Length: 115
Length: 112
Image (cartoon, rainbow over all chains, first blue to last red):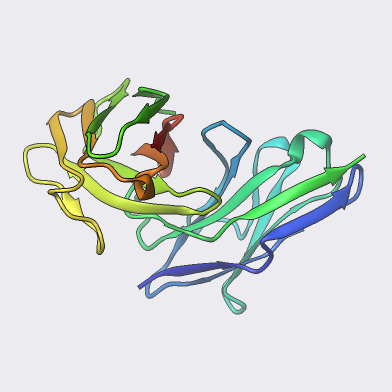
C-alpha cells in the first residue's frame, strides 16, 4: 500500500523568501513521486517528477524537490517565492514507474504569499 | 504532454438527477482515470476506465452510482447518478503519458 502525508496544510511566506513544502511517503515498492500545483479554479499542473533517476529533481517555475529514501521524504522547495506561487500543492506517489497508474494524493498544502 | 478536454466545465443540478461528464484525449491511451475532489479536500480516485472491459472501482465507489463508459482509446464518460448535495465536487479525468499523469480542467458540480 502507498500513502502520502503533507505535513503542513497551510504555509505562509513573504514574497522573495524561500518556500518549503514537506512531504513524507510510504510505499511497498520503488515509488515514483510527483508534485502538482492547482491554482484557484484551474486544473492540476505537473511541477516535477521523480522516477528513480537523480535524487534532486528540478521542475518548472524554479521549484525543485529532493528524494531522500532514508527519510522517506520528497520535500518541495523554491529559493524565492513569487506572488504567482499562491496555490494548492499536492504531493503524489505511485508504486509503479508508469505514472498514470493509480496515484495516491497527499492532503494538499495551501500556500499564501504575502507582498 | 497529452491534452485532455472535459465537458461540461461546471453544472448545477437538481438532486435525484444524473449528470454525464465527458473526457476526450488528443492521443490514444490505455488507461483513463476518474478522480473526485470534494470541497477543500484532496483528490480521491474513483475508478480506472479500461478500454474493452469494465471499469475498476476503488473502495467506496460503486458502478451503480458512478457508471463509466470507455468506448475507445481516446474517450470516456463518467455519470454521477441519483445525485445528492454530497456529490457536489470537482470531478477530474486523468491519463498517463511519458511517465507522468495529466489532468483535465475538471467539472465543478453543484447539486441543489
